[in-house]
Length: 342
Image (tube, rainbow, N blue to C red; front, side, top):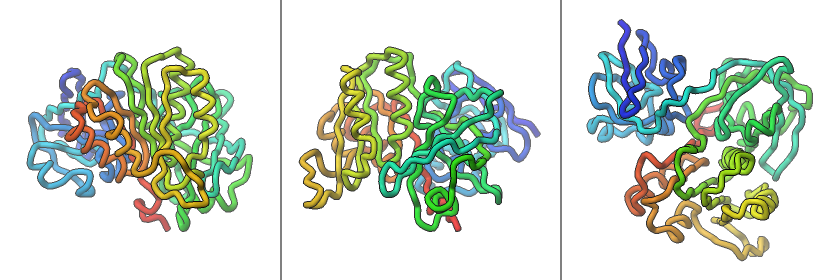
């Protein structure tokens, strides 16, 4: 039986076929529901159920706890309606989503950014166009059907090639390939764009851009988009890493500061050693934001990186600094270890 899903306050509606998760149905029909991993692991798609019955498939408790489910929250990525459902998701707007497409891509260039970060440029078919929001991601479709997700690190106007930043996870079936035998001109199959991580341009609120590690990739795309579009909202970038070398495009950010007077940059290192001679901020990057901005009630936050960082930031910024929940936009990185890669 087909059920209708209504989203408040936008008023958007869509139908869900039997055995179909709400998120998949929404994506198929161009509804911009928020999401990240699509695997029930990150919680980015969590929203409040106002009416109806939803049964969940497999998911992690950190994404949706038993108490949250009892309080009426659902994960749309693994939530299956058993009646018509009304959801509250303030991130859903009237803007239509870009079409999701599968396509072949060719590796144009491989560049080591640090000992464990590789920048890859993918060439898309010459007779094709690939539209996406700065901040969204694509999925590589591996030979065995497994998928790996990576954010575009360039804004669309800097295409048509797609730039990705990939961190090596030793033992990971895809990243071992990238850092071992991947060559230029190699063909990879990708699908996208995915994700609800993009700049909300209907606001003039100051922004915190929070990145950990290669979570910088979509933030870089946002900065390129802002500069290209002449967006001058105040923005502060907090980029965290364990060691200074983890801030693998620090020079690029420093150069943007010369052209973007609205941008402030705060690099934060958590595990500096004496030989690093690091004299900047230390500690956890999400805590540095709270130290500088104890009141976030008038801000938007765009955060990307390791789930532990994003989850802590989401909780602390809301509970300790008054950030409205609907003004926290995030993608959590689900690593190959999280996906139990062989």
